[in-house]
Length: 204
Image 1 (tube, rainbow, N blue to C red):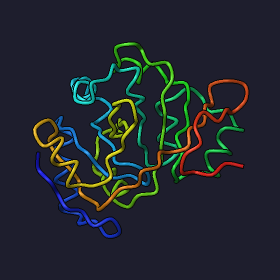
Image 2 (cartoon, helix red, strand yellow):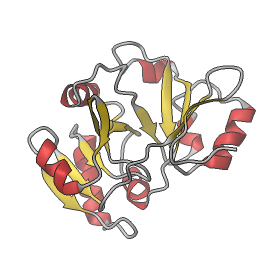
Image 3 (spheres, rainbow, N blue to C red):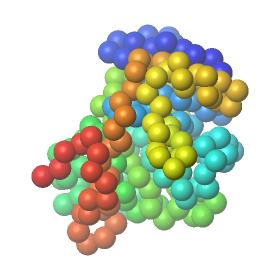
Image 4 (spheres, rainbow, N blue to C red):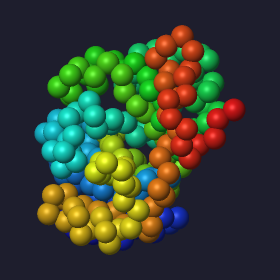
């Protein structure tokens, strides 16, 4: 694993572009978000998705992967048509520590073994991710970096992350200590928006 130090408020564009080029070529990366550290790859990288699941010892369905997108317009390219009420709610809360579960379109489904009919989508409030997404060929697909040993443990310390994952992951973007609170999850696949998990993001 290569550990790359990235300033969380003013990321170096040359470093970011090099990271994006490697992700575009199929590498997987651990990176900070506005919540916990996450493990991800390009959404179109099917072997990368399978590799992430093996690293975290989870089946694809258990991994609860989400697309990270720069804006709602990009999100709409990977989902079924977004209802106007859902669109307004997303516009109100994003960017921020929220995951919206939407119905995925056929294009997204072909990259997953179980033809994933629902997909989480995120627009984190993160200057590192904003910079990175300028150079990516597709959105990142990611899952929270955690372990399940009876108690769910989130990795917040880059030193610990490096020690645990140095032989299994290609890159670690070190943006300093991460948060230990996950995103708030809102399920938008039914008739009403349903709060699935209350996390860092507050809801009315």
